Image (cartoon, rainbow over all chains, first blue to last red; front, side):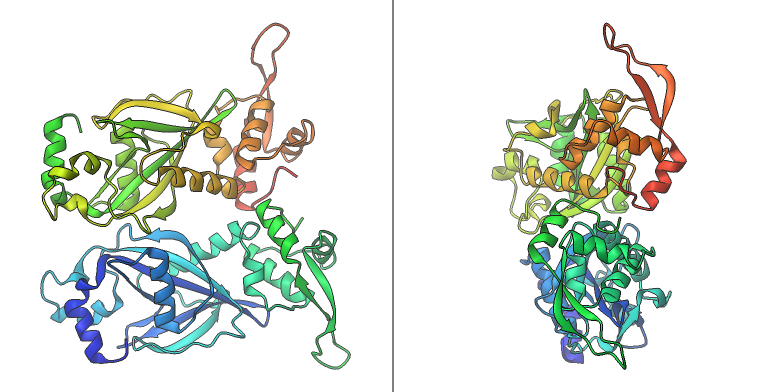
Length: 254
Length: 254
């Protein structure tokens, strides 16, 4: 959406294109400077910060819808995206726009209908991510998962918390490490990522030894120069072994 | 629902009570004779076998709806019930009843609307479960998860497969063992349960030793008599230690 005219048309006639009852909320995780981050957006009109979201089109599959909404709101494309939970037990109006428009919405406008939200999480290397703004958003921010404001719109805090628990529970089943890390990474980078997601500390030697002995990661003949006398070796995932470990739910931290 | 009159009223005027767009499908797991089983139901009118399901009421929270539908269809109450996935990317008509009634449904009947299904899984000790039949069902059956017919209604095979993968991924995070086993169980019973869900074989000594050394299960001063010279000791979960292990995602099989 690019203008106020389009937004007004959406409020008036959006029901012809969209299902009033189905919305998508995207929790976009990135990893940078050894911090796990989430993308939050400032919605127009003093509404506050929340997640990128949108309505499902009438003839659109839910997963296609999530891909489209992620792209429309943030321009992100071709990223790992997976459903994780549905929300809306007690929240009947979700569209943030409605909060501004509610006073002038005629009774029975489609935006006042009960809606269930389908939660999807996205994973990406945020050092490479380029975000372009949608009409709905004034500002974007990557925030450390430890520092998420506790007053996000609607139930977006609950949605992020549930997504974090999902990452924790799926870290040995889904390619979460692979999708969040850059292709080449240092040992402290991968260790901090697993520690952050699992909310535990691992031994500095045991953790990489475990990954290396199972050949889930491999050492490269390449170093990163990060300062005087500091040039740690780089590593990358061994794709086949990593995928096998995920298929077998191998726990690589113990 | 108890009669054809009620069912007809449901088809004609159900939209006043129910959301046409939200349905619930229940995958009910039980464990008996060292077999993990799923409850399937034969729907009326030659429709075939499928899962217990139903529509969400307009003013009803999704989890309340799942509890109600489980109870209405099967009389099961007070069981462990948890959302795991949503379905309906490409299936727009779900109500099995519609398959029979479709020819006589007027254009625009609410049962022809697009519906998304919310999948919930239930866990219970099926030796204790009493199932009472709903009007919609002619017959019930507990089937071993290895022997599920591959021609269930709609996408119910896909739903069961996804539920099984969920059990596998959550076995160290959710009280799956506790909910499926009777209060007192033998070592082969618990071992077979974990082997079935994880689709792996564990060592006959290591597996119980691991559980016992971490005090996740405790040995009782009680035996079960299962035949001449065969009276294995019974065990039960140590609730606090088990819950702590789940909270910490402790993998108890290695």
